[in-house]
Image (cartoon, rainbow, N blue to C red; front, side, top):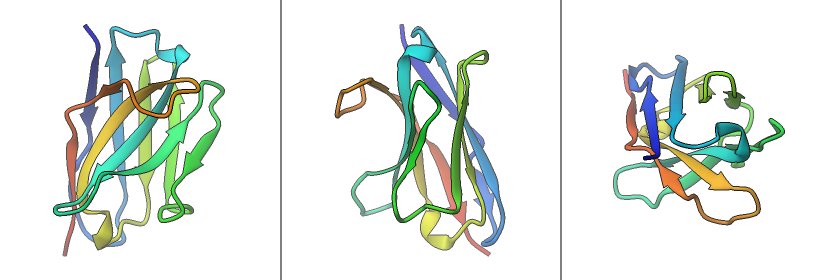
Length: 118
């Protein structure tokens, strides 16, 4: 059984920082492209960052310079560091696992809420 379990969400003030974590089980973690989507209330789901098996990151234009994705294959964990946070980052953040050369994620986490507010 494959599981992606996110953690690290919460309420943060604008300008603050946050690190989301996603730990995978049931897959050979190093074989998968990992990524993060987010969905704000009333909006479509948005892909914000991915990291390849070779640790190459890719970011949506809207988050470049503020988001940092990295992975630790020894811990089966992918991280998303956000700094500085803006109010528009408020959303549910989902961890995903995608097969290399596939367009769509195969597995999704349950999501973690990030709220940016003063």
